[in-house]
Image (cartoon, rainbow, N blue to C red; front, side):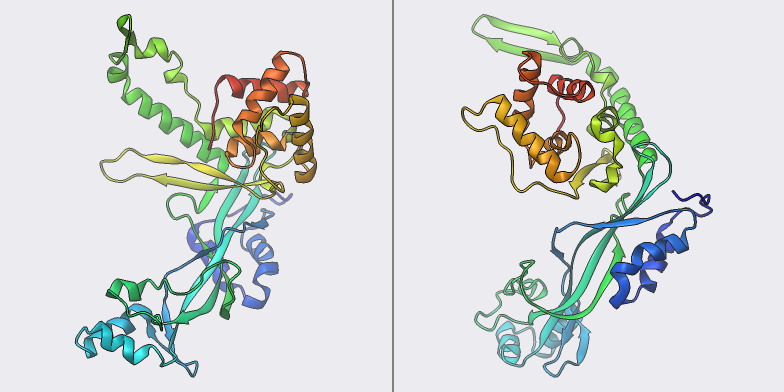
Length: 365
């Protein structure tokens, strides 16, 4: 946060106004300054993630470049004119040169600190999108078997590296309407812990009477659920543990949002259990995945985790990549934890405490 005290917190309407004001040719460089200007006292930074996505077709473009109507409306109108005959529609347009346009993009995040704590920051979840001329309105080689096939074209390549003629953009859009578009992380974590506790307390009468029945060669044994799970009502959600572990570890000297973004959701359907949480998204990734492997020594594992830390530029980076569940196999954490217990390897005391606590009570995303 800058020295100037914030006088206005970001809200969806104001953020969307800022995004709409950006010019395509300067949108990337201008996003953070525009946010800082709109919300005095905040110092935003922007990060993107290479997670290619596309949106449904939204427009039809004639062979001469003229834009026609909305994609779905155009298909419905053309089909109505032909009495719903898919074959006639296909024959009319398979060589007519019409193409459809769609938006393709990747995730982007804007962060601004609000204090010195690990969770003291605001995150904006955005999409960076480019409008492209994606492909012909019908598959020139195969007749459509349903109108849905026309609405959702599958005959064009949507690989992130696929070449497509750009028409407009880039533009930035606010995403994560399910409670995750604009989030103050400390408030979110408090809400996450509170909701989990409320849900567990609401189930207390049922849980206190729940029995685990085990059937074995020596007969049947009943165990009270709470005897087998004495910490059930003291559970700490994985999202809260992720931030607590960062604060307790060697990583705490670094801002967490310089290395991670968070796909946040907070869903509450009528009559359904409220679902709230996030999936952490690494902003910097190692060259490859670290798996336990056969006959690999704990000392060799330590060398590889140190190489990951060096590549990421963050102490104890490998641990958080492990909790993410993709880049470092959890078995690696178990092996190093066992090496610590046996005195075969060493970690800084604070990192050793975090790893051993994780090994005793695991969490993964």
